[in-house]
Length: 450
Image (tube, rainbow, N blue to C red; front, side):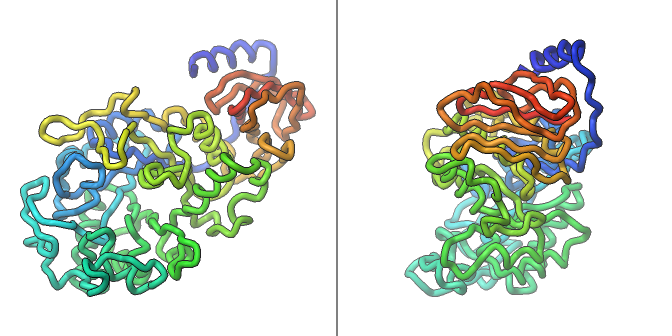
């Protein structure tokens, strides 16, 4: 498809003036290569030329088992996991940096494990004892609800001091624990990583995260997972002093609008809907949690998922993050593994979905239009919308069951020949007055940029 688009652009250039490229803004799109091993991330980074960051899964020693969530139960802070060795991790960071891509690590610092056994690298552990790392007094023991689990999300103290699904809750309010966590993050910084996605941030007071951040050896990009709950006392706005925050409302509402409402409602999407300030929000259509709990769209939604991601990358709100994982038939199902439990190398196809590859063109759209505002908005009052990004880009999204035909669209773009970058194909000519005509098929899009 990409070769056909390039050929069409070249042939079109013979009959239309060539459009000069505008300077690209900073590359800020995050691609989450969920459960990719270090060798595969290293091999993929050279083709991530449109992306700014690659987010990798937790690299520390974890409990054993085939499920995806085993990596979210740390046993020790050794960089040794089913994703690969410390040396492979370091090599991956170097390969990504050589390709101009920064590395964002999913860091699990709120809790450890929920049982006992031997970790991936051979470290023994029990629920509240991790020899050489933590002992029983380094955890919160909330004394509620029988097994110490969080039950009442309306109780701030309980959410931040009781256990998230039986996972031992670290006493991040203590100096020792803060020092231990910071030492782990500083070890990753010494290997060259550029930032952290802090898992379960909502379950730690923002002040605890600030104290850990103050111990870092150098500056790092911080993204915090704070899941918004209506009526709950803990909100994402509390954490913006530490760095960016995931805006879960964005993904949930996007699913509702695409599935049950009108795309025309998206005209003021973002801060106009009461979300975080754009400069502090990281937005997504789905991530590894939400695609499993059904609260957002996912790869299973086909073209609707594609056009929702097209909208996210075209719309100037927040920092976009793209999910790229694997197909699964049960929510606990882990990625492909060999007989020893190591995650196998990624081969894009029916199992490893590599969703991010279909959005390379739209990531380029994001880069080309960065810093511009929305112009020339148009909608049909229902499920067809179109808008420009200054004089650098224009997108049409058709979520209806009918093709959009016989319509011209007004842009502020220079005249010339342009071809679609959203993945559905086709080219058009923008005239001297900024108008172009194009037929947009049902549940598809058409996006062009300079």
